[in-house]
Amino acid sequence: MDVDSSLKIVGLCSWVQLINLATFGLHFSLGALQLTAIALTIDQSVEHYCKPPSGFTVNETAPLINRINDQPVRDGCHMYVVFNRTLTDNVTSCQNGWEYPRVELGETNTLTDFDLVCGRNVLASTLMSLHFAGSLAGSFLTGQAADLSGRRPVAVICLVLMIILGTAISFTWNLELMLALRFLLGLVLPGNTMVAYNRIVEMFTPKKRVMGNMVAQYFWTFGVIMVAPIGALLPNWRNFQLATSLGGVPFLLLYWLVTYESLRWLVQKGRLHDAEAILKKIAKSRNIAYEGSFLAHQEEEVPLSKKTVPREEMLPEESNGQIALSLQQDDKEVEGAFGGIKNRSSVITASVEDVDGNLSYGFIPKREDEKKDEPTTGIMTDESPSSKEGSTVVSKDEGKSARRYTIFDLFKTRLLMKNTLIIFYLWFAMDIMYFEILVYATSFTGNKYLNFFLLSVVEAPVYIHDYFLARRFGCRRPIAVFFLASAVCFILIAFLPAKIAGDTDLAVMIIVVAMIGKFYVNAAYELTMLVGAEIFPTVLRNIGQGSGATVGRVGTIIAPFFLLLKNVVNFLPMTILALMSVVASLCVLLLPETKNRPLPEKYEDSQKLARNP
Image 1 (cartoon, helix red, strand yellow):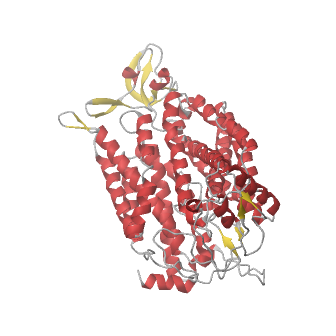
Image 2 (image 1 turned 180 degrees about the vertical axis):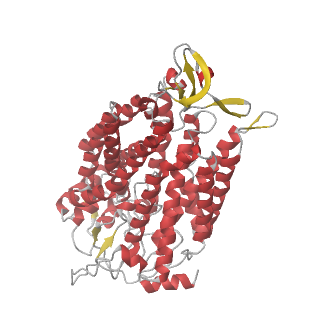
Image 3 (image 1 turned 45 degrees about the vertical axis):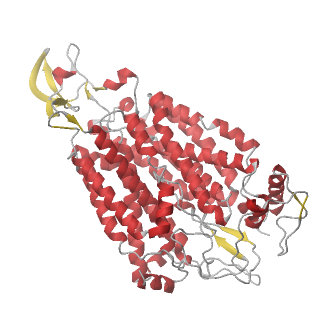
């Protein structure tokens, strides 16, 4: 039997498995919190004014540059010149530094501590950008390390480094050191998000892996949601950073005492004895006695004794009719996120082919009635055909590897080039939009913590919403509608005033519109990742998805500098996002629909998919 067949016997709901699920899931949440919290800790909407000379006030020295809703808006980067204790009409840049009204209330962030405002605000964007650049590099490094050394040790090492680096950031007063630490923290975050995500998904059998993905996504959402309440309780960013970093310490004890290595990774590495011991521990926790070896390489079943597993607890049987190495989803697809911010770069489904970008042995007995090319349902499952060419396949009689494909094969035909460029653009646009709408939460009228919370909690219903919608309508048309709806929301955010004539306050309406826009961005995000997985042939699926996720992370690196466009024209950032959404909506319609279609295996299959959109 293979791992999946063994899990059918022991089940998925033992206390051993649930504790592991909770540990890795909450670790995933902690990584998501660290990844997205920079929207608050590096809040570029912080109120600031030139510090006036002794004996003067800001209202006297700060020029009045505009009136919004009958409220004076004073220049935060210039002041009237004071000569011989006399205020003149001449204007100059800040001579005595800046003062921050919210600091007096105990609310600080990186900008207030390092004066990253006015001419220095590009350094604030650079801090954010380095954070995501580190995440981009870390996704490759931690992914390779997890493949080589195992999920558990890499997760523990990255957790320790996250605690150390996060704590160091909270005590740092040197800007150059802060820049370096932000990059290094970003470097280890994929080991806390991507590796933890993969570990969660690998706990589930193929038939249950869509559910496993949804569980993991909700752990991500929980982490993002917790940013706001913790930030409100700890408005001093250094206390916030210290608390969220040291929050990982209890997980070290849990990892040591209760977690186990991925069964699939152990089998892949030939450590069958260790995998067997874990399976027996799970069986014992459920009072299931099993005579023989779970992972014996044989087709016959070993009988149960003492207690028979109830029929309703037996998971459905699945097989692919061959002994094969099953490709799993590239780690670069996962960060989430939000990446990932949604650098999170999470996946809406994960199949046996697509879990972590590596090879894991699947010894599956052949069934005579197995159908090879079952149509997809709009939600990719694990019953897609195994790779027959390009990807590594091992049969009973041979262990030779076929040719390896590279990113250049994505541009080998005109059709593939079109699909690849569209998927790349969608990833790029989605990551920028996801990040920007979160950061904009701090600049909306009202309490920034409440705004951030509302924009985070709206992610929760997305995954179930997308699951049922994709099964009913497929992916292409819903994605186009989602992008178009988000574009409308971005335009409204850009041009709606906080108040209109008659002193009518529109602040609540703006937040509601932003929540709707964020919902549709998330909805488009999840289904686009599914389309990317289904549209590429099997031999290029991991490369296509992984490359798309990488392009998305490049978008997150660029995204912080979008905020600087507000200094040119206030509505410019959201207007650009709206245009990007419209272009994405049109581009999606150029892709073929994959609902109820067999997953393409070869180049020729992609051509057939395109001929029947």
